[in-house]
Image 1 (tube, rainbow, N blue to C red):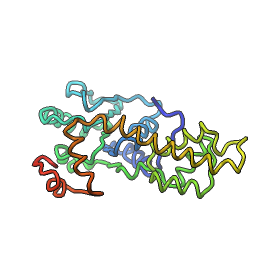
Image 2: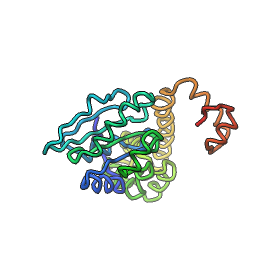
Image 3: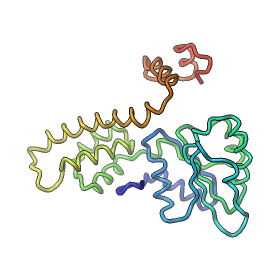
Image 4: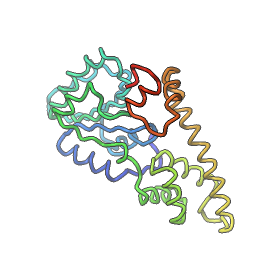
Length: 252
């Protein structure tokens, strides 16, 4: 469902607009909750486009005549296309679509450009919208709260931005909870605001964990959950460290 209240991150929107002008293939990546799909839906608006999921798309679906009609093709959840045979089958089809002048291809995934797509990335020079470009700036976050009719002091906006780092899903959880509680709206007494703010942010912290558990962690298979639990002993890790800690040859 399209968000009733949505704000496009300017950096990401600018890249999409530039890529559209030249029919350049777009690759958007970011973790769950960064608003990848929402950005594309909002940007395309009422324009007709074909939408596919990487978990179910097949080569036979992606056939478009080279005519005067403009085709916008969106393939979401590309990270779900993890079967090597499916990748091998789809590779030449994507290559052909990227060559077609009447097709604008938008790819959406949780990870950076994967190894199997790297030759196409180099050959066709994707426009890459990085995860950080999907985040709100502190000014954009303030505008987003205003759109929810949640009015905050600059100090509160800065506090929330430090907590969530501008990640859209966190800003949405804050806006929803504070709007529900009537924070910063007419009829609330100034002396109530500090306690109300604290209670709202405590609830948002719980909601954020629930979101991660329901929409992220529960979707991992047991093997991946165990693998990441082992890596939780360090704040950051790379392939070599992951391999050393877990002892797994398939750590990468």
